[in-house]
Image 1 (cartoon, one colour):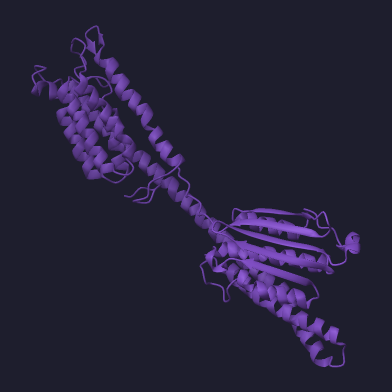
Image 2 (cartoon, one colour):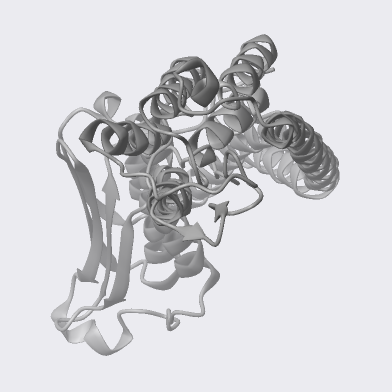
Length: 420
Protein backbone atom coordinates (compact mmCIF):
# COMPACT_ATOMS: atom_id res chain seq x y z
CA UNK A 1 0.00 0.00 0.00
CA UNK A 2 1.27 3.48 -0.81
CA UNK A 3 0.71 6.71 1.01
CA UNK A 4 -2.68 8.12 0.08
CA UNK A 5 -1.73 11.73 0.71
CA UNK A 6 1.75 12.20 -0.69
CA UNK A 7 3.24 10.69 -3.83
CA UNK A 8 6.40 8.65 -3.33
CA UNK A 9 9.55 10.74 -3.38
CA UNK A 10 7.69 14.03 -2.88
CA UNK A 11 8.09 15.73 0.46
CA UNK A 12 5.09 17.53 1.93
CA UNK A 13 5.48 21.24 2.35
CA UNK A 14 4.05 24.14 4.30
CA UNK A 15 1.06 23.27 6.45
CA UNK A 16 1.34 19.52 5.77
CA UNK A 17 4.94 19.36 6.98
CA UNK A 18 4.15 21.42 10.09
CA UNK A 19 1.13 19.24 10.90
CA UNK A 20 3.07 16.00 10.58
CA UNK A 21 5.92 17.30 12.70
CA UNK A 22 3.48 18.84 15.17
CA UNK A 23 1.86 15.48 15.84
CA UNK A 24 5.14 14.28 17.31
CA UNK A 25 5.05 16.89 20.10
CA UNK A 26 2.43 15.18 22.33
CA UNK A 27 4.11 11.82 21.74
CA UNK A 28 7.47 13.30 22.73
CA UNK A 29 6.02 14.85 25.89
CA UNK A 30 4.27 11.60 26.82
CA UNK A 31 7.37 9.46 26.29
CA UNK A 32 10.05 11.71 27.80
CA UNK A 33 8.17 13.42 30.62
CA UNK A 34 5.93 10.46 31.41
CA UNK A 35 8.83 7.99 31.56
CA UNK A 36 10.97 10.32 33.70
CA UNK A 37 8.11 10.81 36.15
CA UNK A 38 7.23 7.10 36.24
CA UNK A 39 10.88 6.07 36.72
CA UNK A 40 11.22 8.31 39.76
CA UNK A 41 7.94 7.28 41.35
CA UNK A 42 7.28 4.34 43.66
CA UNK A 43 3.64 4.30 44.65
CA UNK A 44 3.52 2.17 47.74
CA UNK A 45 4.85 -1.00 46.17
CA UNK A 46 3.46 -0.33 42.68
CA UNK A 47 6.01 0.91 40.19
CA UNK A 48 4.85 3.22 37.40
CA UNK A 49 1.46 3.57 35.71
CA UNK A 50 -0.33 0.23 35.84
CA UNK A 51 -1.06 0.08 32.07
CA UNK A 52 2.57 0.31 30.91
CA UNK A 53 4.97 -0.14 33.83
CA UNK A 54 7.09 -3.28 33.80
CA UNK A 55 6.71 -5.32 36.97
CA UNK A 56 3.44 -3.64 37.95
CA UNK A 57 2.99 -5.54 41.20
CA UNK A 58 6.64 -5.54 42.20
CA UNK A 59 7.80 -3.19 44.92
CA UNK A 60 10.96 -1.43 43.77
CA UNK A 61 12.94 1.71 44.38
CA UNK A 62 12.80 4.53 41.84
CA UNK A 63 14.92 3.97 38.76
CA UNK A 64 17.67 6.47 38.06
CA UNK A 65 17.87 7.40 34.37
CA UNK A 66 21.45 7.97 33.33
CA UNK A 67 22.69 9.95 30.31
CA UNK A 68 22.55 6.93 27.99
CA UNK A 69 18.98 6.10 28.99
CA UNK A 70 17.86 9.72 28.50
CA UNK A 71 19.66 9.88 25.15
CA UNK A 72 17.87 6.74 23.93
CA UNK A 73 14.56 8.06 25.23
CA UNK A 74 14.93 11.36 23.34
CA UNK A 75 16.45 9.85 20.19
CA UNK A 76 13.33 7.79 19.58
CA UNK A 77 11.06 10.83 19.30
CA UNK A 78 13.61 12.92 17.39
CA UNK A 79 13.44 10.45 14.49
CA UNK A 80 9.63 10.49 14.27
CA UNK A 81 9.29 13.63 12.07
CA UNK A 82 10.99 11.67 9.26
CA UNK A 83 8.51 8.79 9.41
CA UNK A 84 6.59 9.84 6.27
CA UNK A 85 9.71 9.88 4.11
CA UNK A 86 11.53 6.84 5.59
CA UNK A 87 8.90 4.67 7.33
CA UNK A 88 11.05 1.52 7.39
CA UNK A 89 14.22 3.22 8.59
CA UNK A 90 12.39 5.18 11.30
CA UNK A 91 10.63 2.02 12.49
CA UNK A 92 13.84 0.08 13.02
CA UNK A 93 15.68 3.05 14.51
CA UNK A 94 12.93 3.81 17.04
CA UNK A 95 12.60 0.11 17.87
CA UNK A 96 16.34 -0.05 18.52
CA UNK A 97 16.18 2.95 20.86
CA UNK A 98 13.23 1.42 22.72
CA UNK A 99 14.87 -1.99 23.12
CA UNK A 100 18.12 -0.24 24.06
CA UNK A 101 16.33 1.77 26.73
CA UNK A 102 14.91 -1.47 28.20
CA UNK A 103 18.45 -2.87 28.15
CA UNK A 104 20.07 0.07 29.93
CA UNK A 105 17.48 0.49 32.70
CA UNK A 106 14.44 -1.27 34.06
CA UNK A 107 11.70 0.18 31.82
CA UNK A 108 8.79 1.98 33.40
CA UNK A 109 6.14 4.37 32.18
CA UNK A 110 5.09 5.22 28.61
CA UNK A 111 8.55 4.55 27.12
CA UNK A 112 6.89 2.81 24.13
CA UNK A 113 5.03 5.91 22.87
CA UNK A 114 7.52 6.60 20.07
CA UNK A 115 7.71 2.99 18.86
CA UNK A 116 3.89 2.84 18.93
CA UNK A 117 3.75 5.79 16.53
CA UNK A 118 6.47 4.26 14.34
CA UNK A 119 4.63 0.92 14.21
CA UNK A 120 1.33 2.60 13.32
CA UNK A 121 2.96 4.73 10.60
CA UNK A 122 4.76 1.77 9.01
CA UNK A 123 1.58 -0.32 9.04
CA UNK A 124 -0.38 2.56 7.53
CA UNK A 125 2.25 2.85 4.79
CA UNK A 126 2.01 -0.83 3.91
CA UNK A 127 5.07 -2.22 5.76
CA UNK A 128 3.08 -5.09 7.26
CA UNK A 129 5.84 -7.71 7.54
CA UNK A 130 8.30 -5.28 9.14
CA UNK A 131 5.65 -4.21 11.66
CA UNK A 132 4.87 -7.79 12.68
CA UNK A 133 8.57 -8.64 13.08
CA UNK A 134 9.22 -5.47 15.09
CA UNK A 135 6.19 -6.12 17.32
CA UNK A 136 7.32 -9.70 18.00
CA UNK A 137 10.81 -8.52 18.95
CA UNK A 138 9.34 -5.90 21.29
CA UNK A 139 6.97 -8.41 22.93
CA UNK A 140 9.82 -10.90 23.46
CA UNK A 141 12.41 -8.48 24.83
CA UNK A 142 10.57 -5.81 26.83
CA UNK A 143 9.05 -8.14 29.51
CA UNK A 144 12.18 -10.33 29.73
CA UNK A 145 14.96 -7.72 29.66
CA UNK A 146 15.16 -7.45 33.49
CA UNK A 147 15.34 -11.23 33.88
CA UNK A 148 17.96 -11.73 31.17
CA UNK A 149 20.13 -8.94 32.61
CA UNK A 150 19.70 -10.11 36.22
CA UNK A 151 17.60 -7.20 37.44
CA UNK A 152 14.59 -9.41 38.24
CA UNK A 153 14.32 -13.04 39.41
CA UNK A 154 11.44 -14.09 37.11
CA UNK A 155 9.30 -12.89 34.25
CA UNK A 156 6.08 -11.25 35.33
CA UNK A 157 3.14 -12.85 33.40
CA UNK A 158 1.19 -9.59 33.67
CA UNK A 159 4.01 -7.73 31.90
CA UNK A 160 3.97 -10.31 29.07
CA UNK A 161 0.19 -9.94 28.68
CA UNK A 162 0.46 -6.13 28.70
CA UNK A 163 3.17 -6.19 26.04
CA UNK A 164 1.17 -8.58 23.85
CA UNK A 165 -2.02 -6.54 24.29
CA UNK A 166 -0.12 -3.34 23.44
CA UNK A 167 1.19 -4.81 20.16
CA UNK A 168 -2.18 -6.29 19.12
CA UNK A 169 -4.15 -3.15 19.97
CA UNK A 170 -1.65 -0.97 18.08
CA UNK A 171 -1.97 -3.04 14.90
CA UNK A 172 -5.76 -3.45 15.11
CA UNK A 173 -6.47 0.23 15.77
CA UNK A 174 -4.09 1.28 13.00
CA UNK A 175 -5.79 -1.05 10.53
CA UNK A 176 -9.20 0.37 11.48
CA UNK A 177 -7.93 3.90 10.94
CA UNK A 178 -6.33 2.91 7.62
CA UNK A 179 -9.58 1.42 6.34
CA UNK A 180 -11.51 4.50 7.42
CA UNK A 181 -9.04 6.87 5.73
CA UNK A 182 -9.03 4.76 2.57
CA UNK A 183 -12.82 4.80 2.40
CA UNK A 184 -12.89 8.57 2.93
CA UNK A 185 -10.35 9.01 0.13
CA UNK A 186 -12.44 6.79 -2.14
CA UNK A 187 -15.52 8.89 -1.40
CA UNK A 188 -13.57 12.07 -2.22
CA UNK A 189 -12.38 10.54 -5.50
CA UNK A 190 -15.93 9.49 -6.37
CA UNK A 191 -17.23 13.01 -5.67
CA UNK A 192 -14.44 14.54 -7.75
CA UNK A 193 -15.19 12.16 -10.65
CA UNK A 194 -18.88 13.02 -10.44
CA UNK A 195 -18.11 16.74 -10.44
CA UNK A 196 -15.84 16.32 -13.47
CA UNK A 197 -18.57 14.43 -15.30
CA UNK A 198 -21.14 17.11 -14.48
CA UNK A 199 -18.73 19.85 -15.57
CA UNK A 200 -18.04 17.98 -18.81
CA UNK A 201 -21.75 17.58 -19.51
CA UNK A 202 -22.28 21.28 -18.80
CA UNK A 203 -19.47 22.24 -21.17
CA UNK A 204 -20.96 20.07 -23.91
CA UNK A 205 -24.36 21.68 -23.34
CA UNK A 206 -22.86 25.18 -23.54
CA UNK A 207 -20.99 24.23 -26.70
CA UNK A 208 -24.20 22.94 -28.25
CA UNK A 209 -26.07 26.13 -27.35
CA UNK A 210 -23.29 28.32 -28.73
CA UNK A 211 -23.22 26.33 -31.95
CA UNK A 212 -26.99 26.44 -32.38
CA UNK A 213 -27.30 30.18 -31.70
CA UNK A 214 -24.13 32.24 -32.05
CA UNK A 215 -22.40 30.15 -34.70
CA UNK A 216 -25.55 30.05 -36.83
CA UNK A 217 -26.00 33.84 -36.58
CA UNK A 218 -22.35 34.53 -37.37
CA UNK A 219 -22.53 32.25 -40.39
CA UNK A 220 -25.54 34.19 -41.69
CA UNK A 221 -23.75 37.50 -41.16
CA UNK A 222 -20.71 36.23 -43.03
CA UNK A 223 -22.81 34.82 -45.86
CA UNK A 224 -25.05 37.88 -46.28
CA UNK A 225 -22.18 40.36 -46.12
CA UNK A 226 -20.36 38.34 -48.79
CA UNK A 227 -23.47 38.32 -51.01
CA UNK A 228 -24.00 42.06 -50.50
CA UNK A 229 -20.38 42.73 -51.39
CA UNK A 230 -20.66 40.57 -54.51
CA UNK A 231 -23.87 42.20 -55.72
CA UNK A 232 -23.03 45.74 -54.68
CA UNK A 233 -20.47 46.61 -57.31
CA UNK A 234 -22.03 50.07 -57.69
CA UNK A 235 -21.99 50.81 -53.95
CA UNK A 236 -19.70 53.56 -52.62
CA UNK A 237 -16.16 52.47 -51.85
CA UNK A 238 -16.57 53.13 -48.11
CA UNK A 239 -19.65 50.89 -48.04
CA UNK A 240 -17.83 48.11 -49.86
CA UNK A 241 -14.92 48.42 -47.44
CA UNK A 242 -17.31 48.22 -44.48
CA UNK A 243 -18.97 45.10 -45.93
CA UNK A 244 -15.56 43.56 -46.52
CA UNK A 245 -14.58 44.25 -42.91
CA UNK A 246 -17.83 42.67 -41.71
CA UNK A 247 -17.23 39.60 -43.86
CA UNK A 248 -13.60 39.19 -42.72
CA UNK A 249 -14.34 39.86 -39.06
CA UNK A 250 -17.26 37.43 -39.00
CA UNK A 251 -15.09 34.77 -40.68
CA UNK A 252 -12.36 35.17 -38.05
CA UNK A 253 -14.99 35.16 -35.30
CA UNK A 254 -16.30 31.87 -36.65
CA UNK A 255 -12.80 30.38 -36.58
CA UNK A 256 -12.30 31.44 -32.95
CA UNK A 257 -15.79 30.23 -32.06
CA UNK A 258 -15.02 26.80 -33.49
CA UNK A 259 -11.84 26.76 -31.42
CA UNK A 260 -13.82 27.59 -28.28
CA UNK A 261 -16.39 24.92 -29.11
CA UNK A 262 -13.58 22.38 -29.50
CA UNK A 263 -12.19 23.29 -26.07
CA UNK A 264 -15.63 23.10 -24.45
CA UNK A 265 -16.28 19.69 -25.97
CA UNK A 266 -12.94 18.45 -24.67
CA UNK A 267 -14.20 17.22 -21.31
CA UNK A 268 -10.72 16.48 -19.96
CA UNK A 269 -9.25 19.69 -21.35
CA UNK A 270 -6.41 17.90 -23.11
CA UNK A 271 -3.95 20.15 -24.95
CA UNK A 272 -4.39 20.19 -28.68
CA UNK A 273 -7.98 18.99 -28.53
CA UNK A 274 -9.22 22.08 -30.37
CA UNK A 275 -8.98 22.12 -34.12
CA UNK A 276 -7.27 25.54 -34.18
CA UNK A 277 -4.84 27.09 -31.70
CA UNK A 278 -6.26 29.76 -29.45
CA UNK A 279 -5.00 33.26 -30.28
CA UNK A 280 -2.10 34.89 -28.48
CA UNK A 281 0.02 37.99 -28.77
CA UNK A 282 1.39 36.73 -32.10
CA UNK A 283 -2.06 37.61 -33.50
CA UNK A 284 -1.80 41.22 -32.32
CA UNK A 285 -0.81 42.63 -35.77
CA UNK A 286 -3.98 41.13 -37.30
CA UNK A 287 -6.05 42.66 -34.51
CA UNK A 288 -4.49 46.07 -35.11
CA UNK A 289 -5.12 45.84 -38.87
CA UNK A 290 -8.79 45.02 -38.34
CA UNK A 291 -9.17 48.02 -36.03
CA UNK A 292 -7.49 50.28 -38.55
CA UNK A 293 -9.73 48.94 -41.29
CA UNK A 294 -12.69 49.89 -39.09
CA UNK A 295 -11.43 53.48 -39.04
CA UNK A 296 -9.69 53.60 -35.66
CA UNK A 297 -6.16 55.02 -35.49
CA UNK A 298 -4.08 52.43 -33.62
CA UNK A 299 -0.40 52.35 -32.66
CA UNK A 300 1.04 49.15 -31.20
CA UNK A 301 4.37 48.54 -29.52
CA UNK A 302 5.41 45.05 -28.36
CA UNK A 303 8.68 44.70 -26.42
CA UNK A 304 9.98 41.19 -25.79
CA UNK A 305 9.31 37.72 -27.18
CA UNK A 306 5.72 36.43 -26.80
CA UNK A 307 7.01 32.86 -27.14
CA UNK A 308 8.88 33.24 -23.83
CA UNK A 309 5.73 33.53 -21.69
CA UNK A 310 3.24 30.94 -20.50
CA UNK A 311 0.51 30.01 -22.97
CA UNK A 312 -2.30 30.90 -20.56
CA UNK A 313 -0.76 34.31 -19.89
CA UNK A 314 -0.24 34.83 -23.62
CA UNK A 315 -3.93 34.20 -24.32
CA UNK A 316 -5.07 36.36 -21.41
CA UNK A 317 -2.90 39.28 -22.55
CA UNK A 318 -4.25 39.05 -26.09
CA UNK A 319 -7.87 38.88 -24.90
CA UNK A 320 -7.37 41.93 -22.66
CA UNK A 321 -5.95 43.92 -25.59
CA UNK A 322 -8.74 42.67 -27.85
CA UNK A 323 -11.49 43.66 -25.42
CA UNK A 324 -9.94 47.05 -24.69
CA UNK A 325 -9.57 47.80 -28.40
CA UNK A 326 -13.14 46.64 -29.04
CA UNK A 327 -14.31 49.09 -26.38
CA UNK A 328 -12.45 51.88 -28.16
CA UNK A 329 -14.12 50.99 -31.46
CA UNK A 330 -17.49 50.76 -29.75
CA UNK A 331 -17.40 53.79 -27.43
CA UNK A 332 -14.80 56.14 -28.91
CA UNK A 333 -14.23 55.44 -32.61
CA UNK A 334 -12.86 58.97 -33.11
CA UNK A 335 -10.06 58.43 -30.60
CA UNK A 336 -6.49 57.28 -31.19
CA UNK A 337 -5.63 54.03 -29.39
CA UNK A 338 -2.14 53.14 -28.21
CA UNK A 339 -1.25 49.55 -27.33
CA UNK A 340 1.85 48.77 -25.29
CA UNK A 341 2.95 45.25 -24.36
CA UNK A 342 6.18 44.85 -22.38
CA UNK A 343 7.32 41.26 -21.83
CA UNK A 344 9.84 41.03 -19.00
CA UNK A 345 11.51 38.15 -17.20
CA UNK A 346 8.83 37.90 -14.50
CA UNK A 347 5.93 40.06 -15.66
CA UNK A 348 3.99 41.06 -18.76
CA UNK A 349 2.70 44.63 -18.71
CA UNK A 350 -0.24 45.41 -20.97
CA UNK A 351 -1.58 48.93 -21.50
CA UNK A 352 -4.27 50.15 -23.91
CA UNK A 353 -5.01 53.87 -23.84
CA UNK A 354 -7.05 56.14 -26.06
CA UNK A 355 -7.43 59.89 -26.32
CA UNK A 356 -9.38 62.21 -28.61
CA UNK A 357 -7.71 63.11 -31.87
CA UNK A 358 -9.32 66.53 -31.50
CA UNK A 359 -8.73 68.01 -28.02
CA UNK A 360 -11.92 70.00 -28.41
CA UNK A 361 -13.95 66.79 -28.54
CA UNK A 362 -12.96 65.75 -24.99
CA UNK A 363 -16.50 66.03 -23.68
CA UNK A 364 -17.75 63.57 -26.27
CA UNK A 365 -14.69 61.37 -26.44
CA UNK A 366 -16.82 58.38 -25.48
CA UNK A 367 -20.31 57.78 -26.75
CA UNK A 368 -21.18 55.66 -23.69
CA UNK A 369 -19.81 55.45 -20.14
CA UNK A 370 -17.66 52.48 -19.15
CA UNK A 371 -18.00 51.83 -15.43
CA UNK A 372 -16.87 48.90 -13.36
CA UNK A 373 -20.20 47.25 -14.07
CA UNK A 374 -19.40 46.78 -17.75
CA UNK A 375 -19.13 43.15 -18.81
CA UNK A 376 -16.00 43.94 -20.81
CA UNK A 377 -14.18 45.32 -17.79
CA UNK A 378 -15.37 42.43 -15.64
CA UNK A 379 -14.08 39.94 -18.19
CA UNK A 380 -10.69 41.65 -18.46
CA UNK A 381 -10.33 41.79 -14.69
CA UNK A 382 -11.25 38.11 -14.37
CA UNK A 383 -8.69 37.14 -17.02
CA UNK A 384 -5.97 39.08 -15.19
CA UNK A 385 -6.76 37.72 -11.73
CA UNK A 386 -7.16 34.15 -13.05
CA UNK A 387 -3.43 34.02 -13.86
CA UNK A 388 -2.38 35.86 -10.68
CA UNK A 389 -2.15 39.35 -12.19
CA UNK A 390 -3.59 42.77 -11.46
CA UNK A 391 -5.94 44.96 -13.49
CA UNK A 392 -6.84 48.63 -13.49
CA UNK A 393 -9.08 50.69 -15.78
CA UNK A 394 -10.46 54.21 -15.69
CA UNK A 395 -10.74 57.57 -17.43
CA UNK A 396 -7.61 59.59 -18.22
CA UNK A 397 -7.24 63.14 -16.87
CA UNK A 398 -6.74 64.49 -20.39
CA UNK A 399 -9.68 62.59 -21.84
CA UNK A 400 -10.06 59.08 -23.13
CA UNK A 401 -9.64 55.84 -21.23
CA UNK A 402 -6.82 53.71 -19.87
CA UNK A 403 -6.67 49.93 -19.37
CA UNK A 404 -3.63 48.48 -17.62
CA UNK A 405 -2.83 44.91 -16.59
CA UNK A 406 0.25 43.31 -15.07
CA UNK A 407 0.45 39.55 -15.51
CA UNK A 408 3.08 37.04 -14.35
CA UNK A 409 5.20 35.53 -17.12
CA UNK A 410 4.29 32.05 -15.91
CA UNK A 411 1.35 30.68 -13.97
CA UNK A 412 2.12 28.74 -10.79
CA UNK A 413 0.58 25.31 -10.26
CA UNK A 414 -1.49 25.07 -7.09
CA UNK A 415 -0.36 22.66 -4.44
CA UNK A 416 -2.45 19.63 -3.86
CA UNK A 417 -4.40 19.83 -0.59
CA UNK A 418 -3.25 17.62 2.25
CA UNK A 419 -5.79 16.05 4.54
CA UNK A 420 -3.37 14.62 7.12
